[in-house]
Amino acid sequence: MTKRKKKNLITIISLLLVLILMLGFYIWYINKDKFDRNDTSGGSGVSDIASSNIIATMDSELIDKIHFKNSNADMTLVREDDLWLLEADKDRPIKQNYLQNMINLVVEIKTDRIVNEKANDLGQYGLSSPYAYIEATQSDGKTIALSIGNKITGGQGYYAKLLGDDSVFIVSANYGTQLSYSDANMTQVEHGPNIVSENIYHLEVLQKEREDFELIYDPDSIYHMAGTPLLSWAVLKPYEEVYSADTTKVSELLANYGSFSFLNCVEYNVENFAVYGLEEPKASVYVGYYDQYEQELPEPATDSNTGTEINSKTITEEKSFKLYVGETDDKGDYYVRKDGDKAVYTMKATNVEKMLNIDTFNFLNTFVNIYNIDSLNKIEIDIKGKPYTMEIKRDTIINDAGEEEIASTYYYNGSIADEDVFKDVYQAMISAKIDSQLNKEVSPGDSEPVLTLAYHIEGYEEPFTTVYYSYDDSFYLIDKGYPIRFVADKRKIDIIIYAIEEFKASN
Image 1 (cartoon, rainbow, N blue to C red):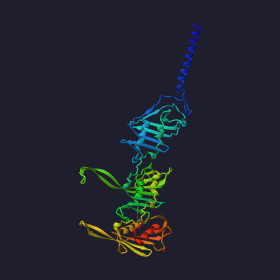
Image 2 (tube, rainbow, N blue to C red):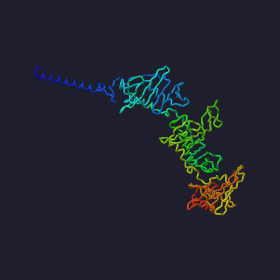
Image 3 (tube, rainbow, N blue to C red):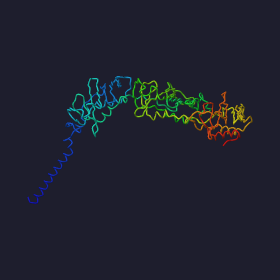
Image 4 (spheres, helix red, strand yellow):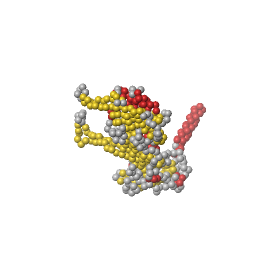
């Protein structure tokens, strides 16, 4: 072999040796965690096992009893007819999906790592006073009891230990989450009704520290003289008298009472409601509503107008719901209970306050007098002591087609008046509005009325009278025979006075 060839061979062998050393180092480096893995807790050395090793198993079909506890719960539940019940109170509704979550935890207990095969000091793992505990029992007597300790620092999972086994191992974060349910969390929340707001016909909100409010649908003017079907809502409280409500604003208000959704059941069978401020509630909310649903007919029917087949009919039932509102919890949410129910729930503060914070004046129909001209017979008017009258007389006549119809004749101060002028003046009169509400009731004292309007309406023996008094440079007091609490813009009432005195079309 020549000197040159010998040198090349040595070089090749050297390179091969370097390559082998580098390959060996690479293999060691990528597997070093398998050869040398230390306990993150600082305890004894770790005994490694295969990934996701199964520690214990149970048969989900046979599990019929579960006892679990943590700092906020200590409950034993039993399965009867595929329904999980609280052993101490079987009438209490339990969240079945939470029980299924717990069953999933014990059906197959897995670990990625055994931390200590024979742990003498359980305190370092938080297992001397466990964070949570679950014991599951099968109908054949097999039992598994699992304690959950501290959460792993900087990792995902918890230290855990089975009763009767000295090994400490790591389980997934699910064990901490699904064993943290409180006693309140475990109760199935029985929410209040979901109500179609358009089906609400009666609302009453009573409060200890604010004025009461009551609103009722009154299309037949049973409670007040609306004078028009457009004003079919009556405000019964807080005033001594009844006022019409603004239909659009009422619709907006009633949207706040369509859903009574609770957060948690704090206590299911309460003996002392005073603890939650519900012995003497700070407020109550009553809703009267119609519930509608479709009912199948026993036999198909035929629509007499269209001839189409009808297979169901709409059933309408009157229903009501009443909720009592107590104090707030440490999160600011309200304790509530349903009328006739012994359970106490929490309800989101924003939802409760929407129901309680009512500015009554904002929902009033602000027209002072809005009587339909078709039902008007006469108006007796007094302007600073001077009388005026406006009257409509109706007669039944036979028209050119030989049909009966009503002919109306309009009068001003006893003389026949132009219909268009009469209606323009009347339009000005009924356009008068409440401008604002006074902070307290007032009296006109010895003041002389500026304007008095007495409306004689068909079907009513007594007239509906409104009197205006001077209040200040901007407003007149409105007196309708009730305590005086509203004022009207002086300029707008003066326009009415001018229109009546001049009896001509108003602008």
